[in-house]
Image (tube, rainbow, N blue to C red; front, side):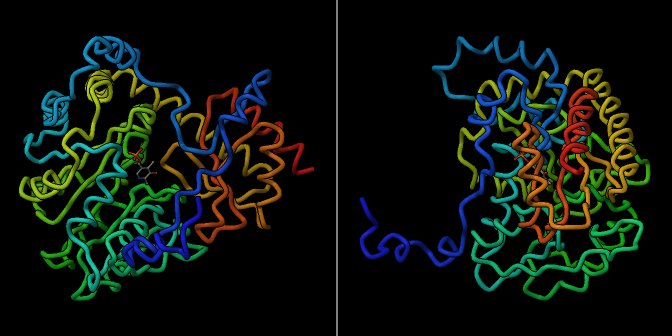
Length: 375
Ligand SMILES: *Cc1c(COP(=O)(O)O)cnc(C)c1O
């Protein structure tokens, strides 16, 4: 069946017409089948190489006999666990089907045609998508220049300079994907002092649990003093529950109430609610993951630098590696040998690849195969 004279394209709202569908990249199902014997090395999606807490797996099994029931639409048990964990009230928390959903809902609720959204060049791709879907205008602030200690990182002065009276949302990622870079809490404090009350500052902390640098700091400590600050977190990365889709936002209770009106009532499913609460309760597993990741991050960054490659500073579970030449063919040759990494040409970084940090064995395989293709 064909779309008669582009009918549906014309019927779509202008904001939707401007969107492009998510590019899923390589067909991982086919690649897994093709490399079944040797095992595919999957370092393309910043997933957690170590898997979730055993308690999370058990929690999923424990709810299997309740799948005919709708999930708890209030997510009360998980919210209470999160409230205790972060020392906030339950009303300050909104649960999302991944933090992606919450980033989109924020724009849907607070941006619109004629209003503006500010983000940084090389900022996480979802911010542009959220602005576009809401029909708002996206303003990109220049990133920090090459030669800076945090090249391509967010420049919070440039962010402040990009604000206009029409700005309603500023999206910041700390640390950022795909650059891995981060900004100190003092820079955020200074930005918050310069931003008007009617501008929401959204700090996406998807990788917060991987951070080991003391000066990086979390925006959570500033929430009580700034009603316009929103912090998003996810169970997809350090908690290793990407397949279940759970994220959350921490914000002023009245802001949380606005988002809550907009979200689908049963947006977080029963196994996801149970697993997330269990994962949150296993501090030991999280600490173990953080330690392994930090140790492998240092080892892999060192091994890549020793090969003459430029590796951006990272506080995450991935590295942005600059090959100094177009990296598209390199990426294709890695995949052909069973190593999946993430091309970032779409971010305007054609000479770079984003490589998730795997286990020690996975990183060894990556380096062996990288040496073959770099020959
Ligand atoms: C992975 C990621 C997310 C979130 O993912 P969800 O799985 O939707 O929670 C959000 N922000 C950044 C910067 C990410 O890299």
